[in-house]
Length: 370
Image (cartoon, rainbow, N blue to C red; front, top):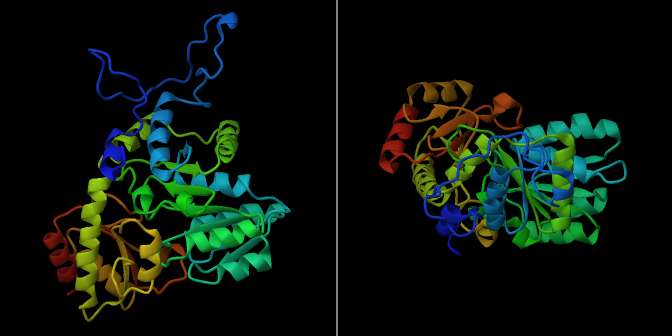
């Protein structure tokens, strides 16, 4: 199974040869306990309690791990996954270097939970000089996010990983905006990849989920053990829904990228819009680097309107754009990022293209801008 679509549809089976009369699609395993049998019948590795493991998790983790290129550990949200990495690979003598323009909740966790415990916290802009920042701060963990959320800046994963490894640091990449189909950080030298599967991977806006995949199985087992101890476990129903949604990821990404390209081009021609960014545009400042490490484009773009009132007017007039704060779903969604504290202009809009008909979506967005 080498093609993206085949991997998405067929990944995570793991049930052996099908039996006549058995269901073709296995449902979620909804249980807190498993039969143990008599003590002398104990089988090493058998399921025993649902905080430790669940067959539905394993199906999902196998499918996503095949896409990422390393063993995967599922979490109940993207932030639970990020938190597991931040807490598991830092300490008083192992600080962390994060993107100053990345997801703001990751910064909050580092500043408000890690720093008080004596963990050094440093920052570098996604498009900044990471090699210099690594040399200056000597972190134990480097967390990247590329393309960044919401600015869609890009950094060189391979080069930064090499610089970090020279100082003994572990490198994790938040791959939420790309998904495993758009980018494979582990193949570029990263040690860990983390993502919010709430977004495009599950794709339907109806669940919370996240995961961490590792290049080294030892790192994966370390994260898995921490999940079992801490209890940050995903629900089997949510995991099963995400696995079901994964089956159409290849198709959804193709339409979302098509819509993003058409919208980015149309928005550039509108007088009220400035600073349109989408790495898939040949003249986007991030394009040259992005095309060397991204396997395909996604559906997220950003642009800036004159002020908050212009954003409000746009959202009031559109009929095909939801005012919501997530991205990667079937429905096109827009979010004014300054409302959450991102250091961006008041009128900056992150727009996540859904899978609506391209012509309909372009007409609606341009019409709503007036």
